Image (cartoon, rainbow, N blue to C red; front, side):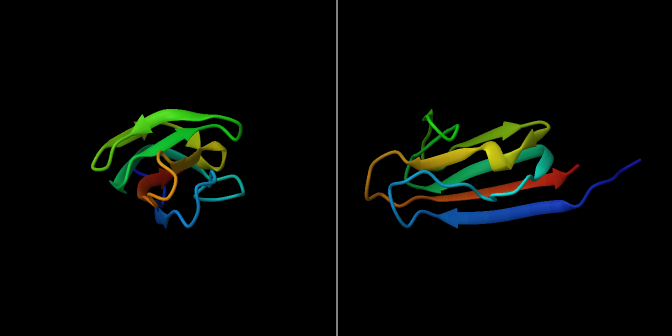
Length: 88
């Protein structure tokens, strides 16, 4: 049995500050996040330390993406991040 709606989004940084795909709860499963251009750092609201290079990706299972923050690895290198997943 299959269930869930596909969620997809894309974000391009406009500044060097941390950002999120959504600001309200968005629970997903089987999530793939790809950094399209310029390396990005991923983490929490207070710390973004996990580096993903341009062309790289990371994946999660069962996560609220409203809690995932990301920002440019290098200030001024405004990267693009794309996400696809299945809503719970």
